[in-house]
Length: 241
Image 1 (tube, rainbow, N blue to C red):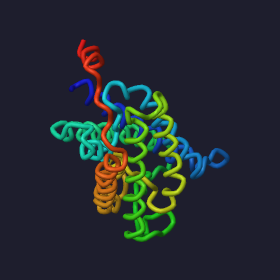
Image 2 (image 1 turned 30 degrees about the horizontal axis):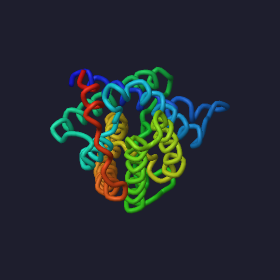
Image 3 (image 1 turned 60 degrees about the vertical axis):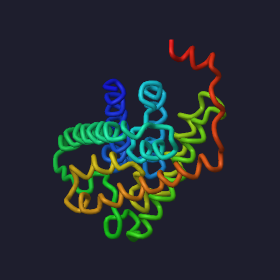
Image 4 (image 1 turned 45 degrees about the vertical axis):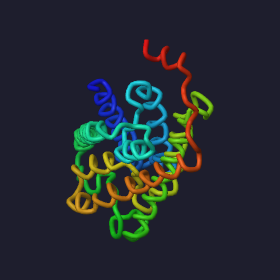
């Protein structure tokens, strides 16, 4: 269990450090700005690379909403959920802390929003709380559907990380203007710790909405996909060795 928790912390560190780092350190540099498309692609690449790296260790949830969605779908044991979420939050905060240390090394640095998620006056496009809630919930739902489907035993093997990473990029292209999209409570909490006070005040939405969307997906996917085929006794015995 300790190895899996360490992998979850490491993976969430990487997601926050690489993904949010692309927004904080690159997006606003004259001549080097990567814009919404670049930031979205950076998050997608971060997810693809770390899923291939640690997916075989912990499953690479790196997101409390994913962990809850997998639990609801009966793909993950409930008693391990608190440990996974704690590891993800700690890893994310450490990643954001490393980013803060780097970003504050530039003269005139002020944390501001620090790539945090927000609604109302703190939405990049000025979208309301309701719009933000709908965006985070709907995209979290479909993100979990993609995760559950691409990791189904009946799906083509070896392509799940690519499907999940591409989904992250696509979701961010659409969602960044609305809430600076997260879908990940650990990522949202990590940057909010170092941002201006409003980020922590609005953080509740970025826990409730993604977990709600993921939990609904955890119910819907098994219903539409049906039960996965049972493993043969020979295969179970081989895994146990």
